[in-house]
Length: 81
Image (cartoon, rainbow, N blue to C red; front, side, top):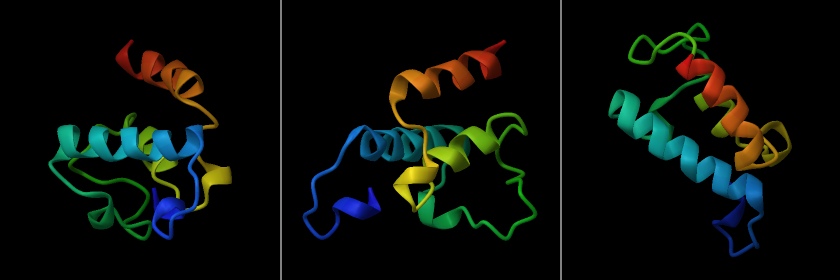
């Protein structure tokens, strides 16, 4: 997660960033740096309903991410349905 690059301690939001990076890699074969916020709000390589979930995971500001993986799971469950 970006906040841990300088040696700062992470928290559950840091883990959410890592999970978001993994989801992006699996779903679109991309790295977080390839996902730009100015691309119209949707990456065509991602399913439209999964895109906002991954974007929230990959927010640079930890306060804008899911607070924990258990909260993220709720949105992933909705996507799977």
